[in-house]
Image (cartoon, rainbow, N blue to C red):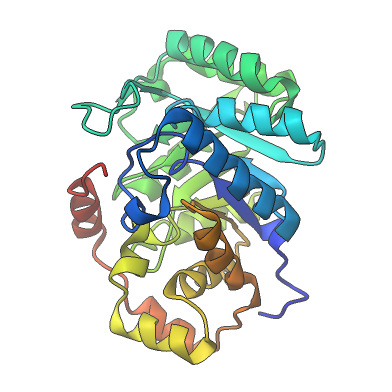
Length: 317
């Protein structure tokens, strides 16, 4: 990997999962956020991160209906700054119900139905309008009712036909199955989905072959949870920590750099909680990993079921 091959602008996106709401499951987030995490403070923190990201060359921002007020924050930032060259992706399928409380019993509720899609598309467009360049089903799994809901599939196909690319994100140990099944969906011979956003990181790379197939088929591939919800930063495995030291970078930068080395050329979605975390993440574009280092990092992979079991135990902070 060389600097000429990797640029911040075309390979790294910023996601607002950690900034659009006061509580989230990321480790290492608490001390990075404004004290109290009130609405206006979180809006200001989001604007600061977006400003620094834009100055650094980032031109892709990823949000979701369930990321609290992320769409509202992004819409305000776009309107205030006047940037017309930003790609915006959002997601529907989860509804934020945390009411801006750190100790809410439930923070989000999932529903993959035609009614939820219609409602949330209307909400997203009301905030972001034509800025939306990709609209994704949030956390599609192989057992989602979407796969047998002809009305919903038709509505998604109609949106794609109207010129808004439609994609999906995935989670769980069976991500690869969900990716392959979703890309088989067609309406009148035309594929419904043109993009996928999956969890891939040094601890959970199992979806990689399916994403390689998607890339080969001309689909757009994004990767989320690149630092395993902070696990790779707060408690980095020994080899990762050592390789990071040798490169004069943080473990987060090395973890993101490993994403960028994949032959299926994913866009790495990073989720910083502050401008400092953003700056550390973006060092990834300058980290050149040797083949032997990549082999050592590949050995960190966990068994998928165990990885997702661990993730499900992470508390909302």
